[in-house]
Length: 129
Image (cartoon, rainbow, N blue to C red; front, side, top):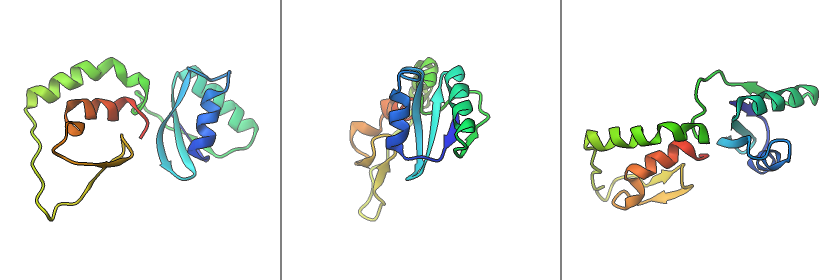
């Protein structure tokens, strides 16, 4: 994973470039001007070299798995099975409960909806947030 100083729009354009299309994705959007790129290690390294040469701010994140990217797809099935096995249930919020804003769906989510069941957590693991 590679944290770079850029906007989500610029990072998306970079990921769509023919050199990187299908090889890197936007993972977390950390702030208005900070995005993390992830997926294929060779492509991330290639991008890092380009950013070095262009003197653009970036930082390598030393992780063994790229959370919020397609790399996590391999463990979704076992993750979902573990969540189901735990029997976790949602508690209905009272009137004084805060609103849940989903980073996976980029909008408020009502806790009683299907949006927060097992597939929500799988989506959170493999999609950008």
